[in-house]
Image (cartoon, rainbow over all chains, first blue to last red):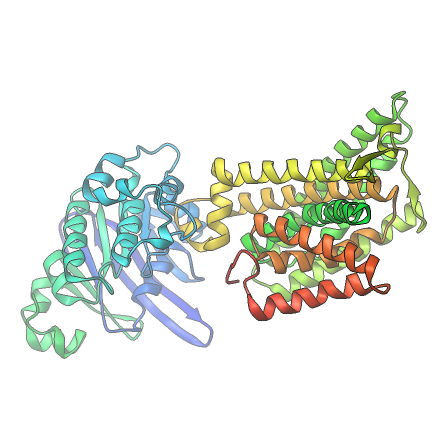
Length: 240
Length: 293
């Protein structure tokens, strides 16, 4: 993971949820540009890591974004420094229309890329007046991604399992959108579908039981069946 | 027919008062998950502030004096509620028992202070002459105050709907009622929305305090607490977080209460409201609006 200076540096991140010590000193760096994958089996703390970066859970440790320590900032202040979040369950506002969901994501002072959003997801323009709660899962994922892409000053997108539960055709659409998004912003991607992850990411951070077990190049991990099996489980070996 | 018309209008008038209290309660719960037992204190303190600060003004017009009292009550209700949110409730977010204790404590303390300052007896309001008259509706002589309360509540309802549907803050409130964490994750300072919603709720409660004084002809320290119980019922029946649900539920509760208190034995109307609450909770737990919370 050498080369460009890291955009995001997570250091010794610890999160307790109830009695569970979910993150146990997670440290890694995300270099600017492209997609970094945050991988690992179910329940190892991937979503909690994203939520910890955003301050949506109580945590200790440090999160440095573009050289600025953000650990003590409130969630909205972190987001205003150019972080966008696409949560695992999409979390669109069901009672608001598609257009209202997007309008809510508009940040003052930022250029709003409606042209890009509607180019990537033309369906959203047609359904602007429709309540987001009545959309299909794939369409809701488009709304969630569109919100993240809307503000031109977003530097990093935290994207949590964007293909989960989607039909193969929609998965391809989402993958294309992420590839396009990676041209304009850095992405930290949590993805359980390893073939999708392998096709998109450059660097990987693998979590195991709340700790980082591997960091490096995705091909290095995926091309070594023993290494992939050790860190990601049997199904990982040879996926592309 | 005359009696039915009278009961209907006075029931809607009572419902209008319930709505003014319930709308704020509903938004506060929906957005912030705060069960605000101090809402009745906003009602009472604001009504007394409006009455006490305007009664010695030499306006020369009871109508102007009443209007000034209403404005003072609205302002005091809003400021009191905003201060309560910032100073007492904000440090206790996610600590629900603490919130209940602090809002109950605030309600008890504020009402005790009002009683200490002005006594426990009701205070008579000076109303302009036109308010003490009646107007014929389907043959019934309906007091003008009932119609005034209904008109003001309808205006407040329209303003709230405009605020929620047509302004960015309203958009934030509607989204926050659904998913507060995601609103923050979009870079929005949700605490500002909390304070604003508390202030709006307090202003509506203050307005209700003065309008209840106008409706009954007097203000008294216990009325806010008494009406708060029905307002909570209205909020639950209407659906937590829904202003429209609260409006519909408030009218249903007010009319039901008036009719059954008149045609049934004493207290049947009040009891029937609790029965209605139980039926709604069994049949449609999310209330009229169907909110799942």
